Image (cartoon, rainbow, N blue to C red):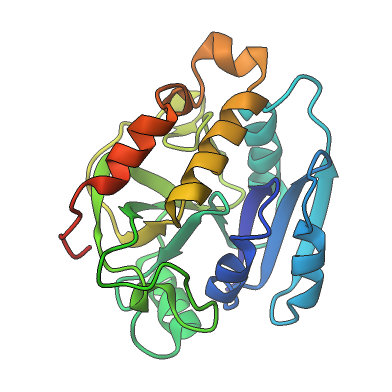
Length: 249
């Protein structure tokens, strides 16, 4: 069995060390590379030798366009020779529930082989720096050792792992799937877990959210794609981080 990851990237140099370490067990990572990137994203990727990586560069015509991105990802899913695709953003780390045990790649692929579902939903927990944790993460250690507190929003139970070549496609935002033009109803059941690293630290969260908001295309704004990024100002983000997230995910 061969598994690939598909993820869009724009100015992801801070997250990529965690992302590349986490997904080192897959057979290939396809980065949809936004040519407007201004940081050293490509340099970080080039230094990481433990993953097979493919880079597909592209240009938006009018800013961040979720329809454009999901069309690229869906085309890869349905034309790929790989068996499954993990479709995530650069701040989403998906894993089988036995992630904390050894031989992650074997356990992950064994689970897929045994169950052979068309797709797998993952419950992605938003994690925040806790008062008992170091603010800076060690990229040489598994992420779950450093970020243990957060919460689950049912919006982030998503079909992240998809069987290739059977006509499945994500809609914008990748929170739902379609087959034969019909949306597959969402449930709150899930087979996988995940961590959402968009709140790596306070300054990172501010930068990431405002950067994404400022890059939104008119198409996204007209269709309310990524509307969660329209809802924040700096004070709201600071108040969010002041909440006591004492629940172990």
